[in-house]
Length: 210
Image (tube, rainbow, N blue to C red):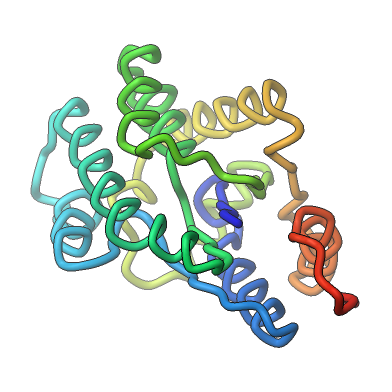
């Protein structure tokens, strides 16, 4: 089963992905937690170029292609093999991020972005996407406490508002796959909701998940 976590900056999705991994491991599932960009040698190089080297002024189309290159390698070399082994794979960001950040945020041609995002996923679609939604200003205020801000974190407010709008549009179009989570709440409260959502999507087993 393939689960993706999506959301605006500062939404707390990375923390929640780690908590879900721990919960599922405790229940006896085999779980791989990964992220985009940044898996493997190529992914780490691409992540550094995309998010960390603030003096590197990438053209939006070049940025799009790098994200897609990272994904294609990631899916081929890690995600698909783990899924074939019967593991649950949790990915912190996937193709939806490309659509909203490069399509809505950077305002590249949306049809082009969607085609490349789909192609780079190698026909892989998440079974469940958890979308962490909260007011953009609240998310950005949380980033003030974070060390090592990425280039995306430093984009203007209007950019992040477009990101949020793009995510909500996807959620509206794909309600069976995308479940919106109110990320402005307490960490434990959010985690309990995530557990209740995920349990409904998990393959049936003899053991009962509480």
